Length: 352
Ligand SMILES: NC(=O)C1=CN([C@@H]2O[C@H](COP(=O)(O)OP(=O)(O)OC[C@H]3O[C@@H](n4cnc5c(N)ncnc54)[C@H](OP(=O)(O)O)[C@@H]3O)[C@@H](O)[C@H]2O)C=CC1
Ligand SMILES: O=C(CO)COP(=O)(O)O
Image (cartoon, protein in one colour):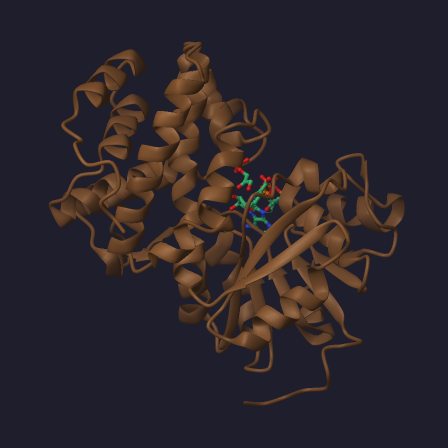
Protein backbone atom coordinates (compact mmCIF):
# COMPACT_ATOMS: atom_id res chain seq x y z
CA UNK A 1 0.00 0.00 0.00
CA UNK A 2 1.24 3.50 -0.83
CA UNK A 3 2.52 5.21 2.26
CA UNK A 4 2.83 8.98 2.27
CA UNK A 5 4.66 10.80 5.01
CA UNK A 6 3.88 9.86 8.59
CA UNK A 7 0.44 10.75 9.97
CA UNK A 8 1.93 11.86 13.28
CA UNK A 9 2.40 15.55 12.54
CA UNK A 10 -0.30 15.95 9.93
CA UNK A 11 -3.56 17.79 10.40
CA UNK A 12 -6.70 15.70 10.87
CA UNK A 13 -9.78 16.31 8.73
CA UNK A 14 -13.37 16.48 9.99
CA UNK A 15 -16.11 16.51 7.37
CA UNK A 16 -19.38 18.02 8.62
CA UNK A 17 -19.54 20.39 11.58
CA UNK A 18 -22.97 19.44 12.92
CA UNK A 19 -23.45 18.44 16.56
CA UNK A 20 -21.29 15.32 16.40
CA UNK A 21 -18.66 16.63 14.00
CA UNK A 22 -18.14 19.69 16.20
CA UNK A 23 -17.81 17.60 19.38
CA UNK A 24 -15.30 15.23 17.74
CA UNK A 25 -13.34 18.11 16.15
CA UNK A 26 -12.95 19.66 19.59
CA UNK A 27 -11.67 16.38 21.06
CA UNK A 28 -9.26 15.87 18.13
CA UNK A 29 -8.00 19.44 18.47
CA UNK A 30 -6.61 18.65 21.93
CA UNK A 31 -3.80 16.73 20.19
CA UNK A 32 -3.83 17.68 16.51
CA UNK A 33 -4.35 20.52 14.11
CA UNK A 34 -7.90 20.09 12.76
CA UNK A 35 -9.23 21.18 9.36
CA UNK A 36 -13.01 21.05 9.05
CA UNK A 37 -14.97 20.71 5.81
CA UNK A 38 -18.27 22.62 5.73
CA UNK A 39 -20.66 23.15 2.84
CA UNK A 40 -21.83 26.70 3.65
CA UNK A 41 -19.61 29.78 3.35
CA UNK A 42 -21.23 31.41 6.37
CA UNK A 43 -20.35 28.41 8.57
CA UNK A 44 -16.76 28.54 7.29
CA UNK A 45 -16.53 32.27 8.07
CA UNK A 46 -18.08 31.79 11.51
CA UNK A 47 -15.47 29.11 12.36
CA UNK A 48 -12.49 30.99 10.92
CA UNK A 49 -13.43 34.44 12.24
CA UNK A 50 -15.41 33.86 15.47
CA UNK A 51 -14.27 30.32 16.38
CA UNK A 52 -17.88 29.30 16.95
CA UNK A 53 -20.42 26.97 15.32
CA UNK A 54 -24.00 28.15 15.66
CA UNK A 55 -22.75 30.56 18.31
CA UNK A 56 -21.11 27.79 20.35
CA UNK A 57 -17.37 28.20 21.03
CA UNK A 58 -14.92 25.72 19.58
CA UNK A 59 -11.14 25.42 19.87
CA UNK A 60 -9.74 28.47 18.00
CA UNK A 61 -7.09 26.19 16.45
CA UNK A 62 -9.76 24.49 14.30
CA UNK A 63 -9.90 25.97 10.81
CA UNK A 64 -12.60 25.45 8.17
CA UNK A 65 -12.63 25.12 4.40
CA UNK A 66 -15.13 24.32 1.65
CA UNK A 67 -12.43 22.69 -0.45
CA UNK A 68 -12.29 18.85 -0.34
CA UNK A 69 -9.02 18.81 -2.28
CA UNK A 70 -7.35 20.99 0.35
CA UNK A 71 -8.42 18.64 3.20
CA UNK A 72 -7.47 15.49 1.29
CA UNK A 73 -4.06 17.00 0.52
CA UNK A 74 -3.36 18.21 4.05
CA UNK A 75 -4.72 15.23 6.02
CA UNK A 76 -3.96 11.51 5.95
CA UNK A 77 -6.80 10.76 8.38
CA UNK A 78 -10.27 12.18 7.82
CA UNK A 79 -13.35 11.77 10.02
CA UNK A 80 -16.65 11.84 8.06
CA UNK A 81 -19.45 13.11 10.31
CA UNK A 82 -22.39 13.84 8.00
CA UNK A 83 -25.86 12.24 8.10
CA UNK A 84 -26.49 9.13 5.97
CA UNK A 85 -28.74 11.11 3.59
CA UNK A 86 -25.75 13.26 2.57
CA UNK A 87 -23.02 10.63 2.92
CA UNK A 88 -22.80 9.35 -0.65
CA UNK A 89 -22.91 12.85 -2.12
CA UNK A 90 -20.16 14.08 0.21
CA UNK A 91 -17.94 11.02 -0.36
CA UNK A 92 -18.28 11.57 -4.12
CA UNK A 93 -17.04 15.15 -3.67
CA UNK A 94 -13.94 13.82 -1.91
CA UNK A 95 -13.39 10.70 -4.02
CA UNK A 96 -11.23 12.29 -6.79
CA UNK A 97 -8.77 13.52 -4.13
CA UNK A 98 -8.52 10.33 -2.03
CA UNK A 99 -5.69 7.77 -2.32
CA UNK A 100 -4.96 4.37 -0.78
CA UNK A 101 -2.73 6.01 1.85
CA UNK A 102 -5.75 7.84 3.32
CA UNK A 103 -7.44 6.52 6.42
CA UNK A 104 -11.17 7.31 6.79
CA UNK A 105 -13.24 6.94 9.95
CA UNK A 106 -16.95 7.78 9.96
CA UNK A 107 -19.39 8.49 12.78
CA UNK A 108 -22.66 8.13 10.89
CA UNK A 109 -25.41 6.01 12.48
CA UNK A 110 -27.56 5.43 9.42
CA UNK A 111 -27.81 3.28 6.27
CA UNK A 112 -27.95 3.97 2.53
CA UNK A 113 -30.22 2.31 0.03
CA UNK A 114 -28.39 0.71 -2.89
CA UNK A 115 -30.90 0.33 -5.71
CA UNK A 116 -30.52 0.47 -9.50
CA UNK A 117 -30.53 4.10 -10.73
CA UNK A 118 -33.98 5.61 -10.78
CA UNK A 119 -35.57 2.99 -8.49
CA UNK A 120 -37.00 3.89 -5.08
CA UNK A 121 -37.98 1.82 -2.06
CA UNK A 122 -41.66 1.99 -3.03
CA UNK A 123 -40.85 0.69 -6.56
CA UNK A 124 -39.07 -2.40 -5.29
CA UNK A 125 -41.29 -3.39 -2.35
CA UNK A 126 -38.76 -5.89 -0.98
CA UNK A 127 -35.05 -5.40 -0.42
CA UNK A 128 -32.21 -7.75 0.45
CA UNK A 129 -28.77 -7.28 2.03
CA UNK A 130 -27.24 -6.17 -1.31
CA UNK A 131 -29.65 -3.23 -1.37
CA UNK A 132 -28.41 -1.90 1.96
CA UNK A 133 -25.05 -0.21 2.50
CA UNK A 134 -23.42 0.73 5.76
CA UNK A 135 -21.26 3.84 5.49
CA UNK A 136 -18.03 1.82 5.36
CA UNK A 137 -19.52 0.00 2.38
CA UNK A 138 -20.35 3.36 0.75
CA UNK A 139 -16.72 4.42 1.23
CA UNK A 140 -15.51 1.12 -0.30
CA UNK A 141 -17.89 1.52 -3.24
CA UNK A 142 -17.07 5.15 -4.00
CA UNK A 143 -13.33 5.48 -3.25
CA UNK A 144 -9.97 3.70 -3.51
CA UNK A 145 -9.49 3.94 0.25
CA UNK A 146 -8.89 0.61 1.98
CA UNK A 147 -8.21 1.52 5.60
CA UNK A 148 -11.73 2.37 6.76
CA UNK A 149 -13.05 2.62 10.29
CA UNK A 150 -16.14 3.69 12.15
CA UNK A 151 -16.75 5.43 15.44
CA UNK A 152 -19.75 4.31 17.51
CA UNK A 153 -20.79 4.16 21.15
CA UNK A 154 -22.75 6.12 23.75
CA UNK A 155 -21.62 9.54 22.52
CA UNK A 156 -24.31 12.17 22.93
CA UNK A 157 -22.66 15.16 21.27
CA UNK A 158 -23.74 17.69 23.91
CA UNK A 159 -22.17 15.67 26.72
CA UNK A 160 -18.93 15.24 24.75
CA UNK A 161 -18.86 18.97 24.07
CA UNK A 162 -19.23 19.64 27.80
CA UNK A 163 -16.20 17.41 28.44
CA UNK A 164 -18.13 14.80 30.43
CA UNK A 165 -16.40 11.40 30.69
CA UNK A 166 -17.34 9.01 27.88
CA UNK A 167 -16.04 6.14 25.78
CA UNK A 168 -16.32 5.12 22.17
CA UNK A 169 -15.42 2.23 19.87
CA UNK A 170 -13.23 2.55 16.80
CA UNK A 171 -13.95 -0.45 14.61
CA UNK A 172 -11.99 -1.57 11.59
CA UNK A 173 -10.66 -4.69 9.93
CA UNK A 174 -7.28 -2.98 10.08
CA UNK A 175 -5.55 -2.75 13.42
CA UNK A 176 -3.64 0.35 12.30
CA UNK A 177 -6.97 2.19 11.91
CA UNK A 178 -7.94 1.29 15.47
CA UNK A 179 -4.52 2.34 16.78
CA UNK A 180 -4.65 5.63 14.88
CA UNK A 181 -8.20 6.32 16.11
CA UNK A 182 -7.04 5.65 19.67
CA UNK A 183 -3.95 7.81 19.27
CA UNK A 184 -5.94 10.75 17.92
CA UNK A 185 -9.04 10.58 20.12
CA UNK A 186 -8.01 9.22 23.49
CA UNK A 187 -7.94 11.82 26.27
CA UNK A 188 -8.34 11.75 30.05
CA UNK A 189 -12.08 12.09 29.51
CA UNK A 190 -12.55 10.01 26.38
CA UNK A 191 -11.71 6.31 26.38
CA UNK A 192 -11.40 4.51 23.01
CA UNK A 193 -11.96 0.76 22.63
CA UNK A 194 -11.16 -1.26 19.49
CA UNK A 195 -13.26 -3.82 17.61
CA UNK A 196 -12.48 -5.65 14.36
CA UNK A 197 -16.15 -6.25 13.45
CA UNK A 198 -16.78 -2.96 11.66
CA UNK A 199 -20.17 -3.97 10.23
CA UNK A 200 -21.39 -5.18 13.63
CA UNK A 201 -20.34 -1.91 15.27
CA UNK A 202 -21.90 0.21 12.51
CA UNK A 203 -25.14 -1.77 12.75
CA UNK A 204 -25.20 -1.46 16.54
CA UNK A 205 -25.25 2.34 16.23
CA UNK A 206 -27.81 2.22 13.44
CA UNK A 207 -30.28 -0.25 14.95
CA UNK A 208 -30.36 1.16 18.48
CA UNK A 209 -32.00 4.27 16.99
CA UNK A 210 -35.16 2.24 16.28
CA UNK A 211 -35.40 1.20 19.92
CA UNK A 212 -34.62 4.76 21.08
CA UNK A 213 -37.65 6.08 19.17
CA UNK A 214 -39.79 3.42 20.89
CA UNK A 215 -38.30 4.33 24.31
CA UNK A 216 -39.19 7.98 23.75
CA UNK A 217 -42.72 6.92 22.87
CA UNK A 218 -43.08 4.91 26.09
CA UNK A 219 -41.85 7.91 28.10
CA UNK A 220 -44.28 10.17 26.23
CA UNK A 221 -47.11 7.85 27.26
CA UNK A 222 -46.00 8.31 30.88
CA UNK A 223 -44.94 4.67 31.34
CA UNK A 224 -42.34 3.70 33.91
CA UNK A 225 -39.05 1.92 34.32
CA UNK A 226 -40.45 -1.64 34.11
CA UNK A 227 -41.73 -0.93 30.61
CA UNK A 228 -38.39 0.62 29.67
CA UNK A 229 -36.46 -2.41 30.94
CA UNK A 230 -38.75 -4.65 28.91
CA UNK A 231 -38.23 -2.56 25.76
CA UNK A 232 -34.46 -2.33 26.13
CA UNK A 233 -33.99 -6.07 26.64
CA UNK A 234 -36.38 -7.15 23.87
CA UNK A 235 -34.99 -4.35 21.69
CA UNK A 236 -31.53 -5.79 22.22
CA UNK A 237 -32.74 -9.20 21.03
CA UNK A 238 -34.25 -7.61 17.92
CA UNK A 239 -31.03 -5.69 17.22
CA UNK A 240 -29.06 -8.94 17.46
CA UNK A 241 -31.39 -10.78 15.06
CA UNK A 242 -31.46 -7.94 12.52
CA UNK A 243 -27.74 -7.33 12.97
CA UNK A 244 -26.86 -11.00 12.39
CA UNK A 245 -29.05 -11.07 9.28
CA UNK A 246 -27.06 -8.09 7.99
CA UNK A 247 -23.65 -9.57 8.81
CA UNK A 248 -22.77 -8.21 12.29
CA UNK A 249 -21.43 -10.36 15.09
CA UNK A 250 -23.26 -10.90 18.39
CA UNK A 251 -20.19 -9.80 20.33
CA UNK A 252 -20.44 -6.25 18.98
CA UNK A 253 -24.09 -5.86 19.95
CA UNK A 254 -23.39 -6.75 23.57
CA UNK A 255 -20.49 -4.27 23.70
CA UNK A 256 -20.21 -0.52 24.18
CA UNK A 257 -21.52 0.36 20.70
CA UNK A 258 -24.54 -1.95 21.18
CA UNK A 259 -25.95 -2.22 24.69
CA UNK A 260 -23.92 0.82 25.82
CA UNK A 261 -25.38 3.15 23.23
CA UNK A 262 -28.82 1.54 23.50
CA UNK A 263 -29.06 2.32 27.21
CA UNK A 264 -27.83 5.89 26.70
CA UNK A 265 -30.17 6.82 23.86
CA UNK A 266 -33.19 5.08 25.41
CA UNK A 267 -32.74 7.24 28.53
CA UNK A 268 -31.86 10.68 27.25
CA UNK A 269 -33.91 13.64 26.16
CA UNK A 270 -30.70 14.75 24.36
CA UNK A 271 -31.27 11.93 21.84
CA UNK A 272 -33.09 13.12 18.72
CA UNK A 273 -34.48 9.64 18.08
CA UNK A 274 -35.87 9.43 21.62
CA UNK A 275 -37.33 12.91 21.12
CA UNK A 276 -39.13 11.84 17.93
CA UNK A 277 -40.86 9.02 19.85
CA UNK A 278 -41.67 11.26 22.80
CA UNK A 279 -43.25 13.95 20.62
CA UNK A 280 -45.24 11.35 18.66
CA UNK A 281 -46.67 10.00 21.91
CA UNK A 282 -47.63 13.53 22.88
CA UNK A 283 -49.78 13.73 19.75
CA UNK A 284 -47.60 15.49 17.17
CA UNK A 285 -47.51 14.17 13.61
CA UNK A 286 -44.28 12.78 12.18
CA UNK A 287 -44.33 15.45 9.45
CA UNK A 288 -44.54 18.23 12.02
CA UNK A 289 -41.74 16.73 14.10
CA UNK A 290 -39.41 16.26 11.13
CA UNK A 291 -40.13 19.75 9.81
CA UNK A 292 -39.32 21.39 13.14
CA UNK A 293 -36.26 19.34 14.19
CA UNK A 294 -33.04 21.10 13.31
CA UNK A 295 -30.89 18.00 13.63
CA UNK A 296 -31.07 14.57 12.09
CA UNK A 297 -32.95 11.58 13.59
CA UNK A 298 -31.54 8.68 11.57
CA UNK A 299 -33.89 6.10 13.12
CA UNK A 300 -36.94 7.18 11.11
CA UNK A 301 -35.37 6.15 7.81
CA UNK A 302 -33.81 3.06 9.41
CA UNK A 303 -37.26 1.83 10.52
CA UNK A 304 -38.44 2.12 6.91
CA UNK A 305 -35.43 0.24 5.52
CA UNK A 306 -35.48 -2.49 8.15
CA UNK A 307 -39.22 -3.11 7.83
CA UNK A 308 -38.77 -3.60 4.07
CA UNK A 309 -35.70 -5.79 4.63
CA UNK A 310 -37.55 -7.99 7.13
CA UNK A 311 -40.43 -8.46 4.68
CA UNK A 312 -38.00 -9.41 1.92
CA UNK A 313 -36.41 -12.01 4.19
CA UNK A 314 -39.72 -13.45 5.33
CA UNK A 315 -38.76 -13.04 8.98
CA UNK A 316 -40.21 -10.97 11.86
CA UNK A 317 -38.99 -7.97 13.85
CA UNK A 318 -42.02 -7.07 15.97
CA UNK A 319 -40.79 -3.79 17.48
CA UNK A 320 -39.57 -2.45 14.14
CA UNK A 321 -42.71 -3.56 12.29
CA UNK A 322 -45.03 -1.98 14.85
CA UNK A 323 -43.00 1.21 14.98
CA UNK A 324 -43.23 1.39 11.18
CA UNK A 325 -47.03 1.30 11.46
CA UNK A 326 -46.97 4.04 14.11
CA UNK A 327 -44.65 6.26 12.06
CA UNK A 328 -46.07 5.75 8.59
CA UNK A 329 -49.54 4.17 8.86
CA UNK A 330 -51.12 6.10 11.75
CA UNK A 331 -51.31 3.11 14.15
CA UNK A 332 -51.82 4.48 17.66
CA UNK A 333 -48.83 3.91 19.97
CA UNK A 334 -51.14 2.37 22.60
CA UNK A 335 -52.38 -0.17 20.02
CA UNK A 336 -48.83 -1.04 18.96
CA UNK A 337 -47.96 -1.59 22.60
CA UNK A 338 -50.99 -3.85 23.10
CA UNK A 339 -49.94 -5.89 20.08
CA UNK A 340 -46.42 -6.28 21.45
CA UNK A 341 -47.72 -7.28 24.90
CA UNK A 342 -49.67 -10.13 23.26
CA UNK A 343 -46.83 -11.17 20.94
CA UNK A 344 -45.89 -14.81 21.60
CA UNK A 345 -42.30 -14.26 22.70
CA UNK A 346 -41.51 -17.23 24.89
CA UNK A 347 -37.79 -17.72 25.38
CA UNK A 348 -35.92 -14.99 27.25
CA UNK A 349 -32.44 -15.37 25.74
CA UNK A 350 -32.13 -17.57 22.66
CA UNK A 351 -29.22 -15.91 20.89
CA UNK A 352 -26.30 -17.19 23.00
N1 LIG B 1 -25.40 14.28 17.61
C1 LIG B 1 -25.05 13.19 18.28
O1 LIG B 1 -25.16 13.13 19.51
C2 LIG B 1 -24.50 12.02 17.53
C3 LIG B 1 -24.68 11.87 16.17
N2 LIG B 1 -24.21 10.76 15.54
C4 LIG B 1 -24.39 10.57 14.10
O2 LIG B 1 -23.61 11.54 13.41
C5 LIG B 1 -24.24 11.84 12.17
C6 LIG B 1 -24.34 13.36 12.07
O3 LIG B 1 -25.17 13.76 13.13
P1 LIG B 1 -25.18 15.23 13.73
O4 LIG B 1 -23.84 15.83 13.72
O5 LIG B 1 -25.86 15.13 15.02
O6 LIG B 1 -26.12 15.95 12.66
P2 LIG B 1 -26.48 17.49 12.53
O7 LIG B 1 -27.85 17.51 11.96
O8 LIG B 1 -26.20 18.21 13.79
O9 LIG B 1 -25.42 18.03 11.46
C7 LIG B 1 -25.27 17.48 10.19
C8 LIG B 1 -24.08 18.15 9.54
O10 LIG B 1 -23.89 17.58 8.25
C9 LIG B 1 -23.75 18.65 7.31
N3 LIG B 1 -24.25 18.25 6.00
C10 LIG B 1 -25.48 17.80 5.68
N4 LIG B 1 -25.55 17.58 4.36
C11 LIG B 1 -24.34 17.91 3.85
C12 LIG B 1 -23.80 17.93 2.55
N5 LIG B 1 -24.52 17.51 1.50
N6 LIG B 1 -22.53 18.36 2.38
C13 LIG B 1 -21.79 18.77 3.43
N7 LIG B 1 -22.26 18.78 4.70
C14 LIG B 1 -23.51 18.35 4.90
C15 LIG B 1 -24.61 19.75 7.86
O11 LIG B 1 -24.22 20.97 7.27
P3 LIG B 1 -25.16 22.28 7.32
O12 LIG B 1 -24.84 22.91 8.64
O13 LIG B 1 -24.68 23.05 6.16
O14 LIG B 1 -26.58 21.81 7.21
C16 LIG B 1 -24.29 19.66 9.35
O15 LIG B 1 -23.08 20.29 9.64
C17 LIG B 1 -25.60 11.14 12.18
O16 LIG B 1 -25.51 9.97 11.41
C18 LIG B 1 -25.82 10.80 13.64
O17 LIG B 1 -26.58 9.62 13.81
C19 LIG B 1 -23.49 9.83 16.20
C20 LIG B 1 -23.27 9.95 17.56
C21 LIG B 1 -23.75 11.05 18.30
O1 LIG C 1 -26.17 8.11 18.85
C1 LIG C 1 -26.26 8.99 19.66
C2 LIG C 1 -25.56 8.97 20.94
O2 LIG C 1 -24.68 7.91 21.03
C3 LIG C 1 -27.13 10.16 19.38
O3 LIG C 1 -28.41 9.72 19.28
P1 LIG C 1 -29.48 10.60 18.49
O4 LIG C 1 -29.08 10.57 17.04
O5 LIG C 1 -30.77 9.92 18.76
O6 LIG C 1 -29.42 11.98 19.06
